[in-house]
Amino acid sequence: DIQMTQSPSTLSASVGDRVTITCRASQTISSWLAWYQQKPGKAPNLLIYKASTLESGVPSRFSGSGFGTEFTLTISSLQPDDFATYYCQHYNSYSATFGQGTKVEIK
Amino acid sequence: EVQLVQSGAEMKKPGESLKISCKGSGYSFITYWIGWVRQMPGKGLEWMGMIYAGDSDTRYSPSFQGQVTISADKSISTAYLQWSSLKASDTAMYYCVRRTGYWYSDIWGRGTLVTVSS
Image (tube, rainbow over all chains, first blue to last red; front, top):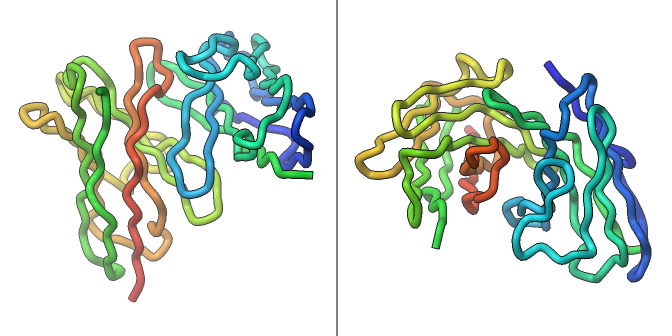
């Protein structure tokens, strides 16, 4: 099974900061990677798919990059609404695997 | 509006059976896979498995194979997740998700909280 590892587990940042979260796959997964945001008590929300494609309606301060085994989610200028937990997910035709999550906290 | 509407919170005792539901609307239910995701209290997301509503082709994550059953009734655009004998460790929030033709999950239900306690 492919394992997805996110880093860091927790990130403390201030409004306006540039934030980067990394997700590593245990073997190559091409661009089959999505990023989700989850706020407390809510269902996750899709931000990015196919590693770098922004879902409709998602603010342009979010961006994704990477290919193969290493991927990043970047928030160019952190906003108050962005304090949440972020998950990467590898998906293929028969399954899916999530990373363990990265909590973005207020510094 | 495309949405997945999940059944309400459940409180059960260990050993009891349970079936929770996820009803799709606003799109062609039979042409998409529906997946199930577990989130234990204070923990991350875990992929459980999925079903293709059109023909009920079902695929389970190895961790959940034999522990739960995923099914669907396409006549009422509803997918199900069921347990035959609940354990305290099944206490979690369960989300259903729609998988697009490119396999990522774009629509999430609001979740069903299952609490198993004696």
